[in-house]
Image 1 (spheres, rainbow, N blue to C red):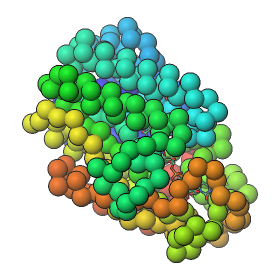
Image 2: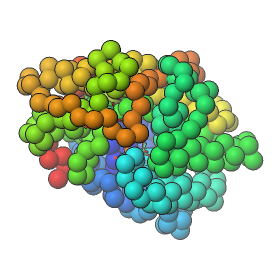
Image 3: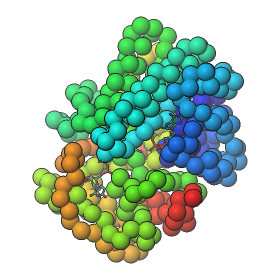
Length: 336
Ligand code: NAD
Ligand code: WQD
């Protein structure tokens, strides 16, 4: 298959390029590098032996996007491009509606112009808001606590409305839990700009000496050790979920949402201990007040993806930490 990947130079996109190429597909990447580095694609080539074809542009530029999609001759799209920092979305909500919602609208118009009607979309477990049921099934009520989450909800609704209006579309909405880890080669991984918002890259930067200590945001939650519990999923497992979703769309017209998680919850302190074991060092941390907007516990019910996509996460927490450490220790400054 020939697949067009928006945001393909980013963290999840670059790992997905590798897994698609490994599976024998062709990929074309469309990215404006606002949150990534072209070096990631050179690394994809080092791993897979194939350099993805690159179109540099912004998904909100409909003409450029339509031209690139047509030129690529792709038959399916995976849409990663977007902004993802929750705190920043509270400070700059319009940037998020503009990039994420308008960007997706332009993409759907470009796909319509080119008669490409297969789409895998990056949604997020954030669409479940504060969960009222654990593990969280796809039929759980949807809500959002911040503008970033709201953009994912709006886009999901837009996709369902589009499918209702034209059932020849084939759409897979993948709701990721907490992606972590890196490719086992250590060549590609997460490279956040500035101070990391997410736990695992922050811990990795403490381990490599870029940060003095970790702030643990709250130890008074109703969890076994008082710290927040999440469903961490290895980015390679996540990437493989996209390959499975595309395979399913070959034989179905539908618009369906799937959780991509492991179904297992780990606390912040579980992560610190597992990372210490992976890097062989003690990691300094301090208990700090709760982070505003944080939820105590969430983890996926991944059974729908297992049944419908024939997909299940394989990599455990030890592998997630070891791979993350290999990436961070061999690339202490990321791609830069
Ligand atoms: P990332 O920032 O590493 O990758 C996003 C990519 O999109 C980058 O290469 C960036 O340059 C590109 N991009 C952004 N805006 C663009 C635009 N207007 N035009 C063209 N390219 C643009 O993020 P990621 O972690 O790989 O996330 C990918 C997707 O998955 C995002 O949609 C994100 O919301 C979603 N998601 C991520 C997580 C997570 O924790 N990483 C969790 C759930 C969902
Ligand atoms: C995990 C746990 C923190 C940093 C976010 C988005 C979500 C999705 C994934 C995109 C929590 C604690 C963290 C630190 C800490 N992204 N923590 N010290 O908040 O579950 O989810 O990323 O869709 O939408 O909200 O992930 O990695 O930020 O936090 O103690 O320096 O680690 O309080 O319990 P989160 P996270």
